[in-house]
Amino acid sequence: MEESYDNLPSSHLLGSVPAVVTEGKEKAVVYYEDPEASMQTLPTNINGGGGRGYQTLGSPPVNFCRYYMQTVQSKLSVIREEFEQQQPNNWKGIFSVSSYMQYFNVDTDAVINRLMSSLYPIGGDFFSKIDANPDLYGPVWVSTTLIFVLASLGNLATYLIEKHTDHKASWSFDVGYVNVAVFSVYGYAIVVPLAFYFLLRYLKSNPKLIQLWCMWGYSLFIFIPSSFLLVIPFEVLRWIIVLAAGIDSGMFVASNLKTLDEGNDLAITVVAAFLLQLALAIFFKAWFFH
Image (cartoon, rainbow, N blue to C red):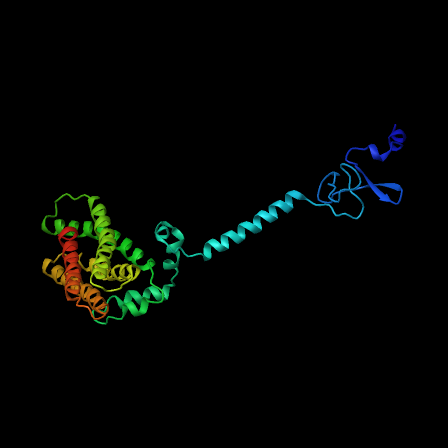
């Protein structure tokens, strides 16, 4: 039985595919085996000779699936590079995430430097520091941190005051502090700079909205360390801390807005910005640390 199987012609075995080779008038039969496959496959005739389903000798086998995938991947990489390099130049860019990626490309040293600059009430050089690379990472981080600080420390301050006046008083965590903190902080950091942007444009000034968002966001940083001091259960000391923080933040915003004068009288806008910062500080004290 073994001998009879050995005598079978190999051209009829499973996986063996003959290919016709034309050399003059004679045809030789060769077998093509794909080294990447587990069994022999039928090559595709790409030169148009040798008959249907056959390949002439000397023509390299082509894996069309692999060639197709490589072509698609190369085209997708080109499209992706063009998309990343393209900057939106119309109003539709406002709703594109890629248009804001550049404002989050900032290192830790730059953020810390801008945080420290926001603590100095008089200077007016903040716009010159951020002119080359204004960021939104710092304002978002400051606003989000301030929300959690106000909600948590506000409840802690209420607890300490109640225990200071009455040791047997019951106390429960007020979740409403979180909602008020979110709407007040995010709303102030977004709406107020936007309103001043249109006001300054109306007064013939030429500010950049991203610069105003950046400055107002960093101006809220002073309220984070101040909130920790407001936990102290002494009302007079609390008011002193709040007023000091509000005046410092208001002077920081006012001194930098004054640099946008450009020959225009912006005294009203500078005073309004200062009073808004002071009013925000008083609101934090009255609502979260009462």
